[in-house]
Image 1 (cartoon, rainbow, N blue to C red):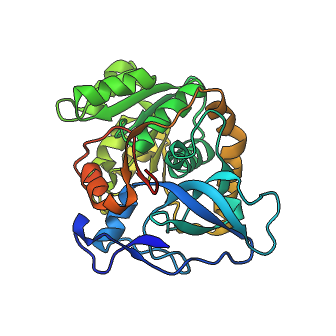
Image 2 (image 1 turned 120 degrees about the vertical axis):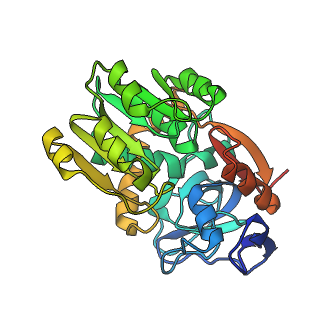
Length: 327
């Protein structure tokens, strides 16, 4: 088969489409013939040499894919060769085939094409696990997601609205904010021109956000705490704004607030399987009825992965950028 490899860390040109050995599904795994994968910021970090796959994972980038089951490993039940699926991966999505633990598979939802389904697993599992399983967003609460037009953001808006929350977003252009509004966002904040803390306070009568989903890390830490409501919950899922920040514990105590920080890739298989099962139970029905949909900006041939990375690095997209193995 062919896969995108990274012989040496570097810029987008470091991604090389070359022939590699076929993966073999082990105990409890299935072999998926990939139709599409999706580009995530973690893939860019891996390409740059900053985010290696966990031990035992595929060395190729790609944290989610969709396709058809080509073979079943020992001990797998409930799936059949030919089933259309999408999968949460620890790596290997930028390839024509990938071996996946059966617990990390999801059926392609009704009303979604097999290639579009590649836009779902990583973002849905990230949002559901952090916003609902950890931060426990409830109906009627105010939810702030940074980067509302990103893959994570577009999914977070839809899921929060589906449970009856009021949604605030930050984004860097009027076009991106307009798209967020179309998805259901109620409070639109241009982070290049406005202070999200002040805007959120004004929009909530001084209360702030009950839950914040943050991909910036250190850069936004202090202001996120300022923006939290009493009993608020801050869920950190990224470090685009740095890894080390100063925390005002007094402010946190005053608000009786909580901060969580999680990553998905390195979690044990059992934890991933539990998240995937929760997503299948709670989110897949919303996708099947059309209340929640993947937002796909464009599809690019997988062998042109470098071009896809440039698009994502330039933030020149809304939603997800997909890599497809077929024309």
